[in-house]
Structures are given as structure tokens and as C-alpha cells.
Image 1 (spheres, rainbow, N blue to C red):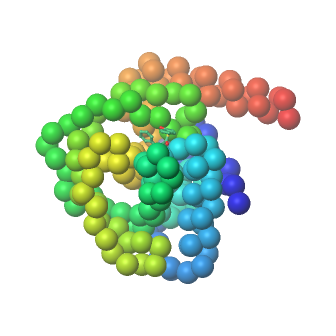
Image 2: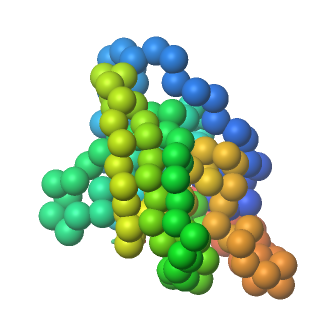
Length: 170
Ligand SMILES: O=C(O)C[C@@H](Cc1ccccc1)C(=O)SCC(=O)c1ccccc1
Ligand SMILES: [Zn+2]
């Protein structure tokens, strides 16, 4: 079923996720529900933090035809390139905002799959950007924190105003 995505500046987006320790049917269902939520948004990634589940779990699918879904559990970056790249990032928790963020161009990440089996991915391009963006979510970080205080405050003000309008219409 579709889950509710927390919207910035909800304070729960700043909670630090805890490692996953139990690989059971609940976890598999959570991955399914997160995937349904992500494809519906639409998005190319989603961290458990964004659906108010504070466990170290993220899903990513950067393929055009939605055939590349992968769950990364207890992910850790084991190598990142010196070379950086600026990419126009978006965020399902900050709808309508896209802005340049500089990050290492390539990363090697180690994680467990939904069965608890370890795997490793070396990524570049959008996958590398997304892995780093989702892992920030698991650390309670939202990509607007890389922008200038002026830009961040304008975004915050706009989102709070929109939140009030949504509340008023209900
Ligand atoms: O908020 C999130 O974590 C999802 C976010 C991931 C992301 C996208 C691009 C750069 C960095 C991180 C999104 O998916 S935003 C939506 C988006 O970028 C997109 C949506 C549909 C097709 C392609 C991209
Ligand atoms: Zn995001």
C-alpha cells in the first residue's frame, strides 16, 4: 500500500535511522510498500526515513522501465572518487525544488539485500548521486542543507505556507 511521504521541514526527516537487524516478512512488505510509493510519486529513490520509518533501508531504481529496483539495507560507502560532479537534485520530501549539489562522481557501496545477503555496487552518474542522496536521508540530512541559507530559508518559508494551505483546505 502507498505510504505517506514526510515533507520538509518536518522534524522527523532529521532523525538518524538505526541499523536493520531482523530480515523478516515485515521488512519485505516495507520494501514493497516503499517501491509502490516511489513509483507512484514518481521518483528514482526513497529512504525509509521519508516514510517515517527510522531504520537503515533505502530503495533505488534509476531505470526508465522500472526494472532496476534494488533495496540497500545497512548501506555503507566503502570508497568514493576524488573527482566531484554537480547534479541537479530533486527530493520527494521537497516537491518542486531542483538545485545543483556537488558530490563525488563515483562511489562503491556495500549493503545487504532484503534477505540479508551482502552485495557491493560501484556506481557513477545518477545512481551514484541517488545512493549518496538516500544515505543522507538515513543520516537525517535533506539535500536543501547543501544550498545557501538564503535559498534554504526561501524553500522552508514556501513549504510551510503550502503546508498551511493544505491544512486549511482539509
Ligand atoms: O527524495 C528522494 O530521495 C527521491 C529523489 C531521488 C533523487 C533524484 C534525483 C537526484 C538525486 C536524488 C527523486 O527521485 S526526486 C524525483 C526525480 O528526480 C525523478 C523523478 C522521475 C524520473 C526521474 C527523476
Ligand atoms: Zn530526497
